[in-house]
Image 1 (cartoon, rainbow, N blue to C red):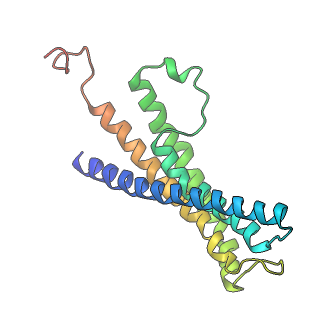
Image 2 (cartoon, rainbow, N blue to C red):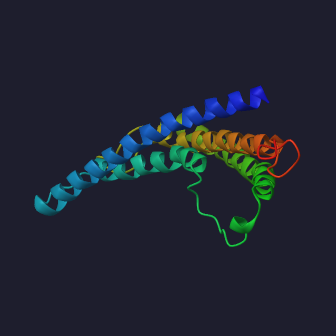
Length: 179
């Protein structure tokens, strides 16, 4: 159990740090969009690189921020039935769902994008547009990285479920309120 809790602390702390980094990237994105919009509409000067930088930053925010969002239970879910369930039932659903759906999906995405990314690195892919950004292969490498981080956080969340399931239940003999 100590090993599970250590893993949870490590992954949670790592994704908190990544979340802070993503927050700063979001600020950078807002500044970039503001500057690009101002230049295009007020001064009639657009830059392809700035426009590409917008979606490059957004892609990184989305990909590596997904694990932070999972940690804070920020992903969209249909809670019509789930919210009415007991904590133990929720823990079982989350535990099974993580290993039946989230981890396999992350592994499939990581595996299926490897050739795509290897090809991009092999040709040192860059923007096809004149004045576009170089090193698009680095951006594409964020795909498996983002899903790897998501998988690690998913496993941490599953381990939290295991810890909750192992904890004594309220109302049982020897539980926290029956003393």
